[in-house]
Length: 253
Image 1 (cartoon, helix red, strand yellow):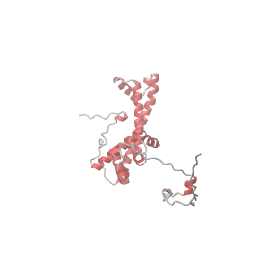
Image 2 (cartoon, helix red, strand yellow):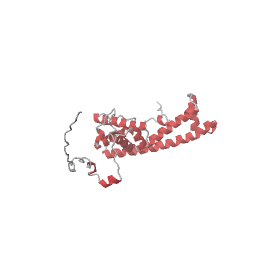
Image 3 (cartoon, rainbow, N blue to C red):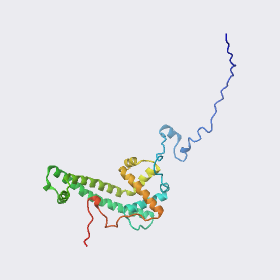
């Protein structure tokens, strides 16, 4: 018969409860200088840890967006390039107000053209459906006639009117609030890590508009850092209005 001998058990005494002074070292730092109390956080508020959404992007966060001063100067340079303001002078605030004034004027002109395009579309669509071309306004009939000479059908004219209405409406909305929309898009994209779709949903824009704003802001920042002049369009009075369906006037020689 085999016997197994076990060693005698040693009596273990549990240590008395103690408080680790380093256990909650980093838990309450976010409450400092925030105006919040622990009771508010415990009863009504919730904290969700969100990962840094900027990680994994192909382009790193530019340095100009991290400085409020450079951010303002880059935004004003972008607006001056967008509204084709030649030889800007004055302080940063005066330049910004000048850009806003030009933007509101362009938005007002775009709304006037938008009204004429919408009226033309409302008059053209029923007439083309029922083939009542004689009831069309003179301008709409002339546009259909020129389109027929180029081999375009009346349905193509309606499609072009839809595109023009969409472009003019977007131009009016962007010009009226260009500074606010561009600043919010850059802040949400670079500092908060939002993508273009989320920003477009928040600002009531399209995602392609957001990506275009970010690209042009980065381009304006590079030109400003290199000291190269901004690429402006034609001076006032010489712009082409092809986006609105109008061709520039030809000068007689």
